[in-house]
Amino acid sequence: MQEQANQIIQTLKDKGLRVTPQRFAVYNNLLSRSDHPTAEQILTDLNQAAPISSQATVYSALQALRGVGLVREVLLEEGVSRYDAKVVPHHHFRCQHCGAIEDIAWETFRSLQLHHLRPGLQVERYEVTVEGRCDRCQDTLEPDAE
Amino acid sequence: MQEQANQIIQTLKDKGLRVTPQRFAVYNNLLSRSDHPTAEQILTDLNQAAPISSQATVYSALQALRGVGLVREVLLEEGVSRYDAKVVPHHHFRCQHCGAIEDIAWETFRSLQLHHLRPGLQVERYEVTVEGRCDRCQDTLEPDAE
DNA sequence: CTTTGTGCAAACGATTTGCAGGATG
DNA sequence: CATCCTGCAAATCGTTTGCACAAAG
Image (tube, rainbow over all chains, first blue to last red; front, top):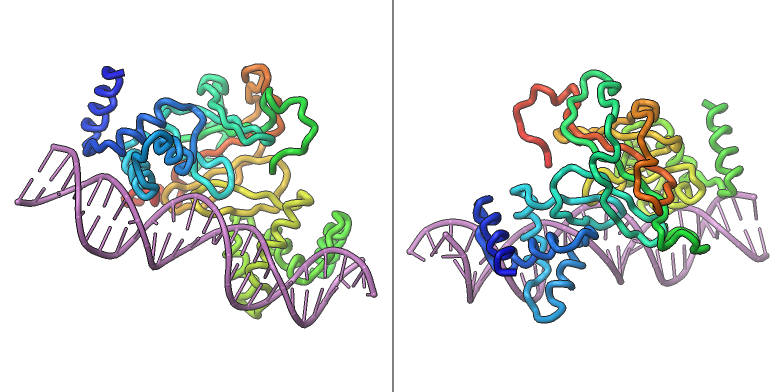
């Protein structure tokens, strides 16, 4: 509600971003979903009821948000970038059959033996990507989408 | 040498692929390097001395090789697909500064607690992506490329 | 008011596709 | 000699850019 809206506006201001209806809408949309949408999916969603934004603006908003660390890009399949407003470290699961993506809590893979890496590599971040089939696609006989 | 060439030809035949000079060249090129080149890099490399292949053919060869499991696609950055003829499971390190990619041996991260995943997810494969700085870029003051 | 964002359409870069001729098994 | 591949150019698709106008601080 109103409360949450103000919260978002404040966050944007704190990051030094100008608050525009489009930027607000993009960020708000990303915060409200956890399916890691593509730029196009966000655009469609925003303009569902009434035209809110153009695609160029969605892309520019995403870049701005990415620039200040409020949004992350997620690369899990060919050809498209997906976006995520959950910026705390976490892993991803991707269903090879339906393409659905879901988060895996960071604690799930505690204790990665990073010190077994060859010396010389300075680690900044890491992430595990798991692929397989989600519940919904479990008994489907059809082959994987890719 | 000749020995190795025959080996490659045999592998392609075994997988049911027709052996063409272009396909051979693409696969041979991928086998000879470990830097996970893009399609364009492969094309450039092949045609360096004399024209061997066109880009459409490189893409089609990559798809054919991917289809029979001899080559894997690696997604580590926006906008481009990279390819890898090392099909045994392994992880990747990517330097955020120079973009270099190198393999991390599978055994490096033994014991991922996959059973801590939520029930319902059927795991097919997984992979760790590590990002940071490689030795060469260690003392560079310049900011990361991305 | 000065700066930055928006929208449109054109521009781009990576990958795909249609098709005619050529090579493979 | 039937099938599949190659090369070329045109087509696609996601994303970016240039620019005139509008909105934010």
